[in-house]
Image (cartoon, rainbow, N blue to C red; front, side):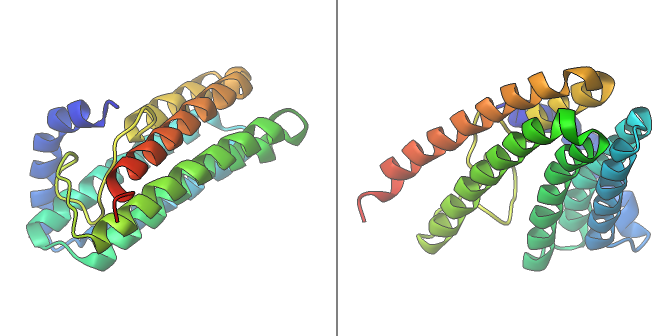
Length: 203
């Protein structure tokens, strides 16, 4: 929901940083993989209770997620780069709830499972829509140049990052935040199903 507005605010700075990295020969895929490493390290930090360290790693992983696209725009977009970016994004989404589940299975395993399930369904609706849209030749530039058709909703990347920051700053509220955000993800999934019905049901 907030991705479009935030994108307009941060893209100029990211583009300048991405241009600098591209001139130095840094590839977009290398930036993507650095973001993946930060995401996985975040999950480990959560599992051992290092929440503030995890918060810093979250920031690094999301910086890389923004920079890889900026580097790619200067060095050339690739289908594999787009594929790798999506896979690493989903690794980021999984790392936090898994980390909390490992930190305290008796307290956090159930809300973490519910949150992961909502991510799974939301992601499935997103990717299924994108696959069929590509087959039909549909395109969207709502989120800038992307490898996939991006559909919008209540729970997008910006909202996810904001909730993850709250969870790390206030771990005792993880369960409440997880259930609440899972609900938003399911609403987004249902909205995308309705959109898919209206878009695809004619053929």
